[in-house]
Length: 112
Image (cartoon, rainbow, N blue to C red; front, side):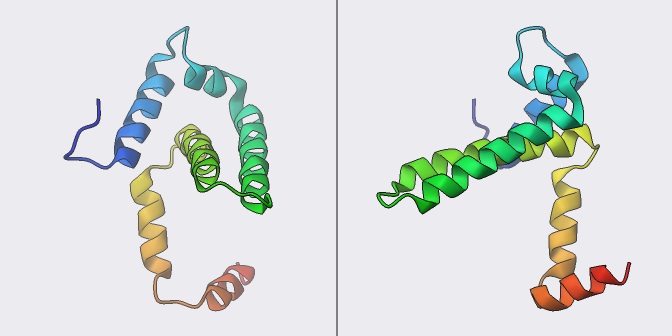
């Protein structure tokens, strides 16, 4: 059930975190965690490719792009949870970069 008080991203991340902690036997998400970073990463690569293909298709259907973007987002969230990274962490990093040229930001990372 969707809670109007929190974003769907926050709700999804909460479910993912619950699956990480409880590892229900009939849970796709728990299975991803059991497979580790390599399994989750493989799904991210697969879903990213599917998203690009959906966007690239000559007869690209908006809903297909949305569907593939949702799949990629879900798997990204699983990877974040596996690494102990929360949505707030990503939001803070994006806020830090906001107003900075992408080229400047990338150049600053090359110094690290």
